[in-house]
Length: 321
Image 1 (cartoon, rainbow, N blue to C red):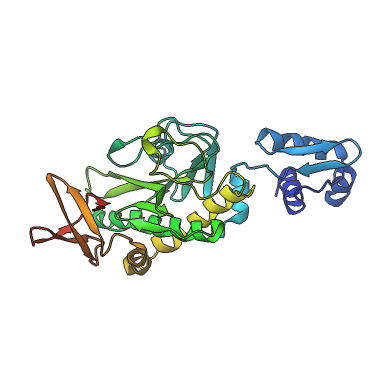
Image 2 (cartoon, one colour):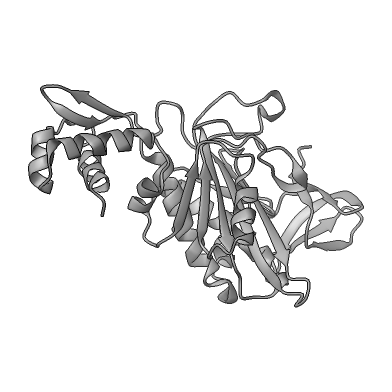
């Protein structure tokens, strides 16, 4: 482990408490100048470190930075993590890396997306430092039809991460939106690339956007979008822990897609079941009651016409009457 990473561990464990340069130098068997250089390197990475001539260095209580080291400190599994200050879309960055031969579990996070998008290329609002904007490179060894389950695995993983880190109840609106307290807190977009010659899946990119901090949403999202934390409640390491927990929980379900390990939790959290819904699927649009979810995660809706439709894709909204 590099010196700066060892110093960061000490500062993190004593967050807010000053540690002298002399003490750090003695503990790690280096010069005070080496400690100072490490502190400057950490500051360049975005860490907010308070310093005092007579007291030493302290990691600020309000320091919140997304780095590979910070996320890796909370993750149980190993990932190849790259963080950026600003990108157009994390999914697009991962696609470029995939084309260059990057391995599975390459993860890209950005503090900001200027061209974040969701399903149907709808804009996903991604302001600086307010959320988790994350994409994962996957190289699945299963059929193209099973790529649907990447999204369902991710929805369950987001719910579990939100509950573990923020202590909130999280639910799923079919297919891929995560809600808490009646408002959308997360969108998920899975994109895939196919090998023309073999017809098989070359890779898939999972994109996840989570609203972490309370903020002023654009006019079109007011009343619809929500956040995991209020501005005062979000802990300084909240986003890093959330990203790490999501990655670990998603990996658990992804590696067990063949067993449909995600299915019981996905169905249990699906809050549209038993509710009147408005359905838009392809050229079809109508109202009915969501009555079930089959083994393929297709939604079963008993339409007002009396027929029961099984939806593989589309959008549903709760119908208030």
